[in-house]
Image (tube, rainbow, N blue to C red; front, side):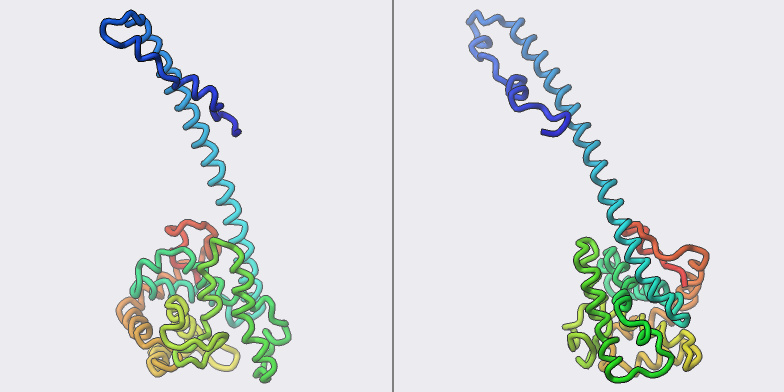
Length: 288
């Protein structure tokens, strides 16, 4: 029995009924004296309940702090793993934060309730965490990958999902991690899902991910202008991307492009993705 919890026998003693014969009209049960005794017992009982309530509240706060500490430790570990992968390739530096920012802005337009779920931000940031399991000779190869090497590279979504899935509060992030390389026409990987079989968070992220890739410098090409990147997204409607998601993203960039770009740049002085598991802090725009 926990500290501060009243033993059952004491509770029974506190609340045991008085002999109601004492309060019947015309009887000689002690009257006022018995009523005073009952009131005294009730005062003691109320005091004990108050003590019990405060003890339970204190234990609850301690448990919340412990759970929060565990969350932060897990998130910090996941963040470190994701950034290890990103650090291996200079050309993708900032990709995690930018795609998270684009993806969340797009999700808010499509489904605000979905955007308010913390695991969405987790999934966007951790989408490539599975690359930690890809050999560096493949991950950092400067030239084209062979067919066999591509087969290895295509395992990273499943590896990432297996890393994150056992962590219960991150479980919802796995749909992005596992399915962000699916294609709307069913020719993606790892599951070959088609159309709306692909979870909506993964369809949203696929567009944000492609946009950032096209508008970033790569060793084999310079960054494409925003207008051209949007045209390529439009060209991929119904094949690589969900047409409705592309339409919303194009509108987002056309209507809020300058503000979105400024928000992404504004985070450059911070240290990256917050490990705070509360939705309000997680859903801020991250740095580039």
